[in-house]
Length: 552
Image 1 (tube, one colour):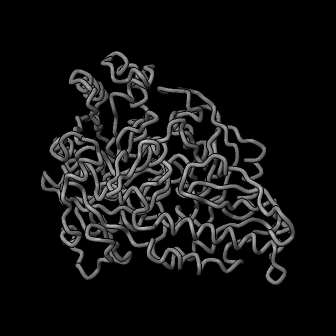
Image 2: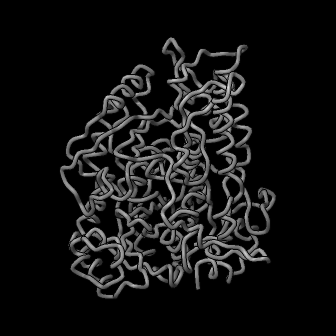
Image 3: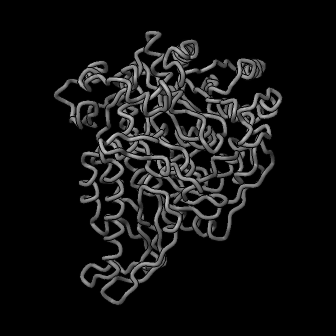
């Protein structure tokens, strides 16, 4: 059966029963139907449980199933007697209708209701989008206004509008055309909602008051004297926070096996920080003994940002890292073409192992014990899976097959037991890749060289000018959130395997003062993706009875 058929074959438990598993009273739930609910953000307290981070090696274009592994691992940990809650990101409609599909797992390792989570969910993305675009409208209105004009220099405004869809034609646009009453003409564009600073702020805010204060700190641009203009100068923060009054509350759903899942926030990891909200993660750590969460793409992207931004901000740390590897990704980095990845090839797997080895070395840089989960696909042979396990063993790393897609939680109880054992044994904290008092240039060099394996890092004239502005505004002590391709350890998506000594070029640096980080953009990264030649949307349909098909 397809993922959607499997999901629909299960009868979800009433959401009240799921809430009771983690000690949430029925009166605290804000129902969104029978099987979804929002939980008040204030229920999160002092985290007491152990945190498990799921990351991965460099993926193939279709992804390697971190969400599937995260869900299956949480189910398996509950099966072996470790009380566990999931904390995951919300799906963006861009990938749903693009190439990767949804973000609810797959096979018998899914969160449900699958269609509702993948399509709009409880309205959080819409609220983020509206708050972002309200600020954009206020900025352009101020340029037009005679009563409250802040003398903004239109050439310095970097704030863009957003939408939750892949639409490359909106990356660069000109607005305000048509005459004096239509606004001030200027160049701008759209980012995807998942890459917006509003999403980043939602995912790092401690509570509603912190959310509003962060909105006020958003840097809009400079006035004609070169002085900074913030969202608070437009008195925008109150209305923006009002739009997110409900969105700040985490969403409670369940896995096919009834494991509680908090799904909240959804930034991408290649162009944003790539992890769910701090509120949801802390809440899960408060209400359960173990929390399984994931960070987008490979350990060079999501895991680094999870640790250096989210964990540092929230004063939390994972007690174990699960590194997802797949046979197809190893073959891909061993030189096999996408069309041939299903053909058995142990030698190609061994050629691709240096990529996984680089990511395992990152685990040592972070100072957190790491276990490999070999996420098994139907085309994988026993010989291939065993080859990966043996190669990891030779490096002193535990590795286990994860057959969660086919079998649900029972497909990886040995992995679950190993994770619980390592997490219980770890009492320390992660090691940051850089110090906050280092310069922006030093921070970028630290991540590029320690985590990517880069040689030299270069900065364009635009990036150097951005660094001077950051220094002048007193923001150089913020963490960095590097925008980089997910397809390679380098900034060139065509460089597979484990490239060494390569150069990284920082094209420009965006300032996310409200979120509390700065964004060096490398290579050809765009913050508005495009659709593939054959979008997933072509296979999605709905019949006269409202039954959806083709969603995955």
